[in-house]
Figure 1: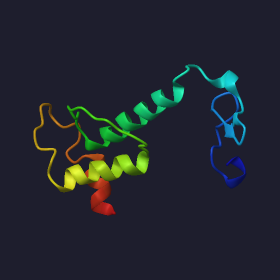
Figure 2 (figure 1 turned 90 degrees about the horizontal axis):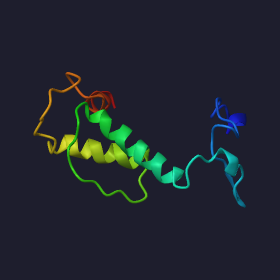
Figure 3 (figure 1 turned 60 degrees about the horizontal axis):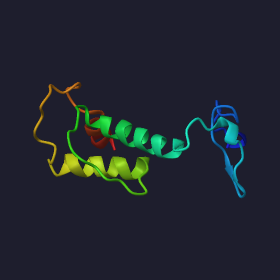
Figure 4 (figure 1 turned 120 degrees about the vertical axis):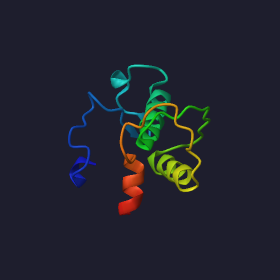
Length: 102
């Protein structure tokens, strides 16, 4: 990835690297369930693009950033995020702005 100009700050010390044989640097793994924790963090971060807290129960299988943002775009476009218990953080959510300029 670095040869392609990506993961410029990534190294064997701060990223988990997988190869054909499995995890190449197990010493970098902090928790046994680190991959699950990372997926949860990804989902929560992506849902934050709504611009206000979303209260609900979610079950995600094989999620990823593209799926999460499509899901959030669907919720917004179908006007399914209507009850706001807190004041929005932004006048327009980051996702609404992204959809507007897409």
